[in-house]
Image 1 (cartoon, rainbow, N blue to C red):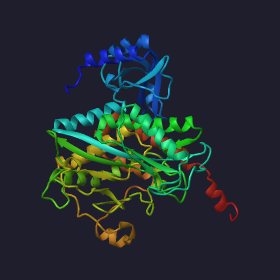
Image 2 (cartoon, one colour):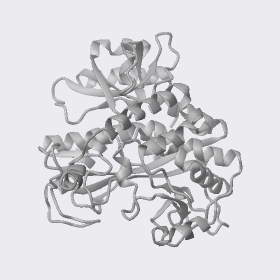
Image 3 (cartoon, rainbow, N blue to C red):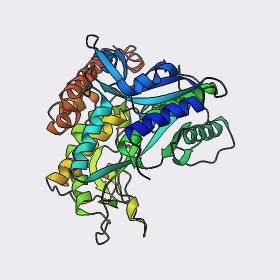
Length: 447
């Protein structure tokens, strides 16, 4: 099916709005930290918005590091028009569209995360590649946002009696389907009250929009049933945290560029160089893929969260895993990058992973030998002997490594690179001066 022209896309949106009696359209965009921002326009403004965009204060994109107010335009992407299933539909339906942020003159705003991803995808396209991703986002359900009281005590893939959480998952999948987002799996995860819904593999820009939508839908469905859903990476001490394993591959001329039938792992030279690039630059991109102070409470040995710079086929302690090849499924050949968590900014996370992989391809890097043994069980001396490095241990460490990275600077662009780092330094400063419950329990009685 031929892609719709811009004119056809706009006409389609106007027609759909009329047919479904849409009264309000929510214009969505992401700030630098991956927080979903939104403002609403009425249907009367829709045609003008599609042509010229709608003005708003651009400083809202900057996260904690707010700059002076600046005029920006939110230009809706007509291909993302969708009715919101949780709003009434019989009368005055509500729709949403994702926006590209542009300056009043029409040129892309360099602080827009969606523009950052588009720029990185163009770099891949110039090399002949289309970037496909399939992230697996885990999350928790709690009774409310004030604490971590769980809804169940289930474990990995448990078929627990039909409880509240099973219904919540089902409603979430149905809502995502209503919004045109394909779902492959949904199941209970390892920790109590922890769940996972996996969206169907697609191109990275569509998927980044889908991740933003998914996180809102999970929370909205929970809210409608009087409970709270969170993508916080590590809400419960002593239990597994929530990850976002990202399956990724590059396609060239309709074929999977990662597949080679003669390789023992069925990985092409391109795929192996991509893996080498990811492993080499993993410490530099970690501040983006695991971007919160709390992310580093998850990235510790022993909880299925990978912290060692290694790759393999079967081993789930490795940073990069190569899922088993199934005969006849060449297009499913992919690598799985396991350190990101679901609270990252997907536009920026997909950008830096792609940039790291492409750097490996462009420089013809070769990955080290795969590590099929459990890296957690090796001694530090064994890991050193095999040159197995580790990811940064805290947000502060990660930001310091990122600051020196040319690959990340180029991937994010000067504006986002510096604004992101400034945001993370503000977050770290606020965190490090806190006096925690742990400190009071540990030190107050003895000091």
